[in-house]
Length: 463
Image 1: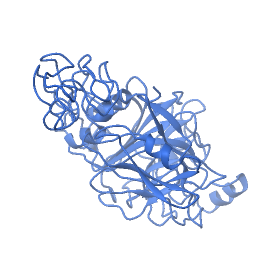
Image 2: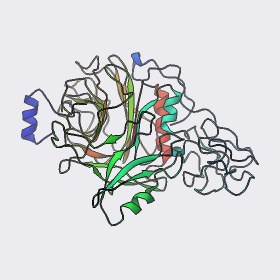
Image 3: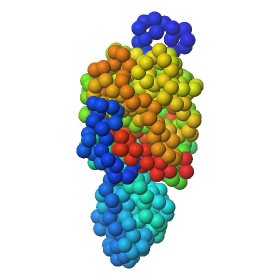
Image 4: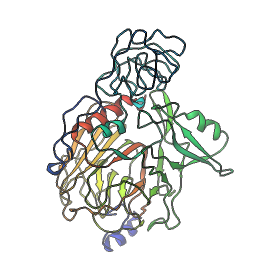
């Protein structure tokens, strides 16, 4: 969005603004996507299966069966007595004691000790353990150990995009999370996870950027689709393309690990990311779902801080041509939710909506007061959408909307680009900090959303 004068001009031109008008108990399967936002698959369970049991003398073996490497054993790398977790103690919630957990905990997630404190590794082994070896703590709780994309995969609604600057979103992922660019010489450096299924290895950034300024030049997609996010190219509102986010900003602690989010504070900068040549993204009225973990104290007052499915053109291609999470308190197109906001909304192009009725206040869509937020947008086929939000540090999800789409937004006409920090037409008034998010193929049941929320909480954001 632009200034007040520009806004008026844009609205007079049929709202051509870019933003459009502008984790895990074995849950029961959700309801059919056609009957609500709950899900398009009734056969999916809530997520991971019961974990394996840790043996008192079993060797580590392959990842997901005790240790985190072929040489670790029972929580230490030097013994074969299975220390940690106790003989026969319960494994994690992953398919076999956690994807990188097991008797003795994982080597990739820092100290665990307490139940379910290591979601990023994908395995809530027999307790936790130190990053080197450590002894096991109490058994992982509530099946929160598998990573978000493992949970989605088990529900037959796989991730087609998985972006994070904080942690692995698959329990077996061991690659780079993002790429840095050093301003002084334009050299780049990939920042990986510290180990498979683990958190960011921030020492790589600290070393590469020591005494220099760095930006985040690429956010890697952890899914097999490889829908990486570079800075956005030219668009309606950013004719020369966007800027890369300052890598030093958006700092946070997650389970004792320092990380940096994607920091967007437009205008003043033109930060935004977009991939216009994606693979596997929903198009037309195909079903999808998405979530993001966001800073709860920084948000847009207008259009748009978005994450989701948008136009490839960088222009307003008309109502229903995008479907993205909107984070802010704009009332330009919808009277908003309860209170003064901010709210989680659905940017559907030519409108950011908190429910289906632009002329009314969406009383079910509560203002957000949490420091860290988990935001969900459910996009089944047909005239249904769902919006959910949760405290990323504790508790369960709250349904903000589950019902019809606004008039004129069915069937959807999704195009399949991915945006972050900007709107569909490149609107450059976004404000927010993004830490992680996924987009799926298909709309999972509500039980899977609950499992994702439990996983995010167990990740230890802000701790």
